[in-house]
Image (cartoon, rainbow, N blue to C red; front, side):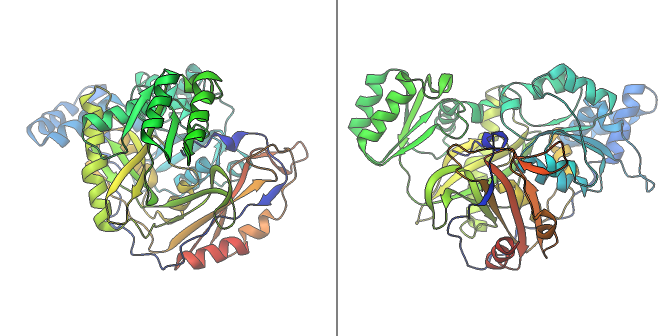
Length: 500
């Protein structure tokens, strides 16, 4: 499970918790495509004129006579007038004002890449962190993501043309629904579509109905029924809470007693609160895990680069599981053949199935995969946001315009979008608080940031950090920093990250 809420928890002295054993093989060629477009400036202007009356009627008539994507493009732009309430650059290109919601390592990576995108106008982040506050071109704002009215008011005051929601919790809470009702384009799914991550039973039932390959499973609210099922199946076996449990709600039980204890913890002891009111018990899958990302909007999906992360806290894949101690991209196990299989057998039926169920998906689908030695691929779980720390390495390799891509998804015009990647590999190593994932202190001063940032090919992305009253950067989360580096190979990138 890759829920990653711990970035905002209390933090202690930043101590290097090295990424687990990494593949040293040279990365294969990255997936490549054409240059990302700006999202269709003519369509933006047409939609603006349509809302204001006048000559846009002719453009709408032309679109209706044209292809279905053409019709959709004009109508989507008309629905989202905020897209055109942005500054025009001197070269005439449309600039979109962007608000990023969140304050972890993923959000720092997104802000970093959005700030460098040609189509970005003003860029804001709420609540952000100490690293985002120092990122050139980004302004931090004090907004409570739970106060939907305040978020909408800010978007209206600042002419926000795109809201990018980083964490899953605001999406499960329905922030995207509120923004869409206020005609603010948002990259992220509705509350109903967010069940794809927010409810494991919903996701598994979707897989069963639409023939998406996944582990055999059963759902339970009754303790004795769950235990009887586990005894009939044996171990190893996996027990999961149905709801979000901050990355703690998945138990991979290597013996039956551990699985039975997990049932008691979830259904009897309420160890995970309401998230454990229902549980999912599924077969243990063996193979190599990988993270697969696709940007989705308007019924279309665009594949992104692959990645693999490491969750155990210590070197050599040792110690307790965490929200993620490091990642690298591309993942050699995700070949072009595997990419084609995943898009055909997992991503497309998921997108089509969500639409058929009345909850069409907009945003990023993060599919956790298990790839068997014989090449068969099964879905472990779906997530509705960029992974953390996978997002850091994806953004390090992305060479096309991120704002244009996310806006195209948000406005249902992905047929105009494409994505390009650097051939370099990227690695992120998480620096965690001493004691993480157990208890730890917070407020410890972090030194050496400037020296690390000066290293060739290195970008230090902040996760759990804050600024003290004296202006020092201090720890404020379990995972504190993500030292991100690129290189000609995964080995070179890792050496640069460790060297920083």
